[in-house]
Length: 288
Image 1 (cartoon, rainbow, N blue to C red):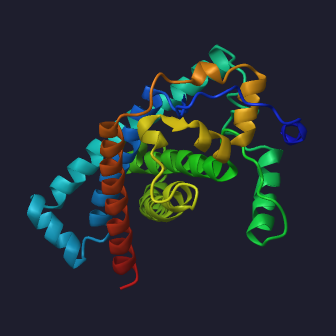
Image 2 (cartoon, rainbow, N blue to C red):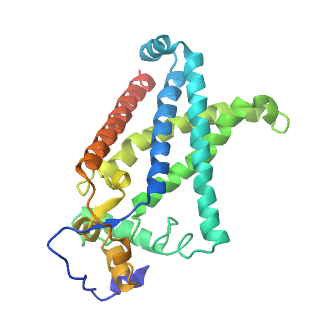
C-alpha cells in the first residue's frame, strides 16, 4: 500500500540489553511446511526416477529399492500426504477469509495476494540492483515470496489433478475424452519437471542464498526472528505493528534454543543438498 511508505517514522519501544525475538510463523504453519517440503522431496526423487527411467542412476536406484513399482508406490504415498496438507491449507484460508471474514486474508499488507505495491517494489528493486535508487521497504510478504507461493499453489492444482487423472484413469475416462488422458501424462511430466527446477533453483536462491539470508533462513524452522532481522527485512511490517500496538503481542518469551537452531540447520542443509543433487541429476538426464 503506497501510504505505508509515506507514513512518518515510528519510534520503536525501548529495548532491554537482551535481544528480543518475535513470532513470524505459528507451530501449525511450520508443521505444514515440514510436510510440504518432505513430501515434495519424496515426489521429486521418485518422479525423476520414473521420468528418466532409462538413465543409469535411475535404474540403479530402482534395483536398490525393489524396482520401479516400489518407486511408484512411494510416489503415490507422498502425493496423498501432500494433497491432505494442501486441502488443510485451503480449508484454513476459506475458514479465515470467508467464514470468519478475517481482514487481510485476500487483500492488504498481510495478504499473499499481489497488489500495486508489489509491482512498485519489483520496479524499485530492479532500480536498486542497477544503482539507480534506494532499496524498497517490504511488508510482511515481499513480491518474490508471493510469486513463490502462487507458483507452488498453481503447481499443486495442475500437477495434482493430472496425477490423479492418470492414477484413476478408468474413472476419469467416464467424462474426459481419450486425448485428454493422453494430455495429462505430458502435463504431469512437464509441469512436475518445471516445479522441481523452480523449487531447487529460484525458491532456494530467493529464500536461502540471497545475501540477507545466506547461507540459510531458519525462520520457517524456528518460527521466530530477532528484532534486528525483523526491522531489516520487513521494516514496513515492523512499523505497522508498532502503530497498531501489536508488536508486543508477537514477542516470544525466549530465543530459540541451541538444539532447535542446530536441528533446523541439519534439516535445512539435508533438504538443500537433496534438492541440489536432484537438480544436477535432472539436468544431466534431460540434456544428455
